[in-house]
Each structure stands twice: as structure tokens, then as C-alpha cells.
Image (tube, rainbow, N blue to C red; front, side):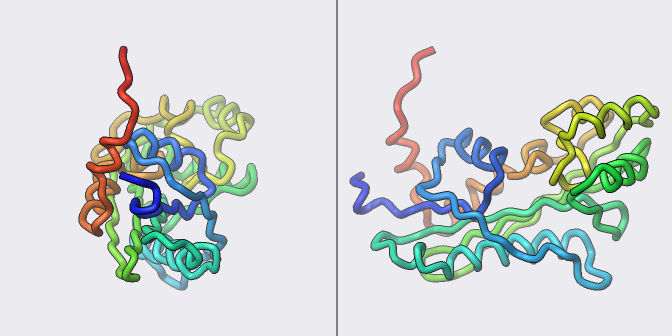
Length: 213
């Protein structure tokens, strides 16, 4: 398949972990276009609704950009957002040590839900969206657990104040759902959402180089 005929894939994210996950699924974006949107929850907004709204807003912001519109090829824009919810309360994406500390203390010894929403906008401008819900239970965290984790800085910018792909993975006693969704991008749902939107998944996979073990 020539580059002139292959649709462009745009990832509307600056997240290194989402890029790695997408590449793990054999899909390398043609362009990274981080979309800056206001992530403040609306009044009484539930975590699931927040994740869906933010993923859609990021995708729409990227799709409307002049650079994206300038492509001659068909363009598929994909965006995602992850929200940690404790009951109906969305926890913040921790920006400082106090927020991270508060999140860890709230999650200690308790179950919570991680909502990972994806939006794909196809070349016709149609939205395709999914939200994956994963239940996670933390062990009861000791003071040393919390103190050393906050000192690690791994929490910065992470939903709920932790990154499961780092040392916080050792806090997880139980997980029901999608591990990749908790990291930031549910692979099964992402691939099937793109395929359902018309992106030529299998044709792209056939272009991948053969890796000999």
C-alpha cells in the first residue's frame, strides 16, 4: 500500500505510554498532536462521563486543527482519557505532592474504578467512542509506601496519583478488566474501534517488518 493511499492516523496525545501501547498493537501514528483541553470536572460530573467528554474534546480539538485538515489523505484521529473514580467522585490527575498524597490515602485498602475512554473521529467526521471500566483494589498502604511513592515523582500528571506501569503496580492486590486501560489505552477496544470506523488495520499490519526471534 503506497503512502499516498494509506489513511493518516493521528494520536491526539502527548502521553508516551499511550504511544508505546499503540505501537505495541502494531499501529504507529503518522502524527502526534497533543490536544490542550480544560480537564476540570463539571458540577456533579460522574467519572465515566468525565472520561468520555474529555476524550471527545481532545479528538475534536485535533480534528479541527488546520494542520490536520491540510492532509490530502483520509485522516483518523484517536484520543483517550483516563479517570480514576472512587464511587461517583473523580480523583484528580495529581499535579503536586499533596494531591498525590491525598489520592493514595483515599485508595489505600480500597477498591476503585478506572475509566479509560477512547474517541475515534473518522474521515467523514463521525465519532466512534467506547469507555472501558476496570476495577482495581489496592493493598493497605503503609506510611513508608506512601512516603516513598510520593518521593518517586511517578505520580505526576497521573489519574488518581499513581502509574500502574511503575512501582505502584506492587500496590495492586486485584484487577478485573483491562490492564492496558489502566496504563492509558485499552488495546483490544482501541483496535476494534479503529477497525469499526474503517481504518485498514490488517493492511497496515501487513506492512510491518517481520521480526525473527
